[in-house]
Length: 67
Image (tube, one colour):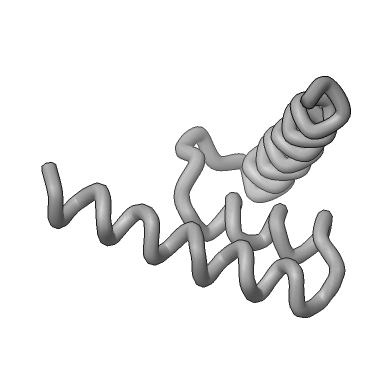
């Protein structure tokens, strides 16, 4: 369980730092889904990134519908 927890924390930190870099690079102040999706594409390899983005969009839609 500790290994999985460490993996999730590491991935979250990587995505957060990449998203932060993208916002600073475009001189923006707002984190949007576009920056997060770009960070996912840059951080994760090919098919895994596509699957993560798809599942993230599905989870967000499910959240909005059940609000």
